[in-house]
Amino acid sequence: MRRFLEHELGGYASDIEVHGAGAAQAYAVARLATDVPYIGEAIAQKLCHQRFLDEPLRARASPSGDASIRLH
Image: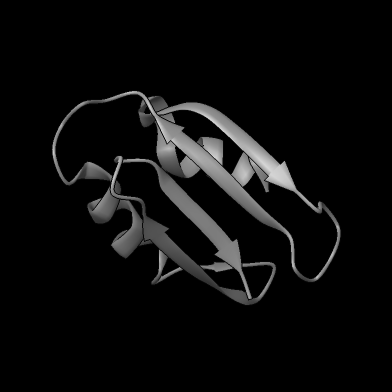
């Protein structure tokens, strides 16, 4: 999951925390390296149209601008 997000987020990610790796309810929190307004929401929308290991991604942006990506 970390490599997938590093590839997708490129230079926008300053830190990626993966929780529950290998489990069905695994999720990751990506802190963004930008202060550009709404970039977290734009990234979350892009990720919602993708799949990871044949599972659809759910993604949301926090009010603080971080992007949180969760598998379901």
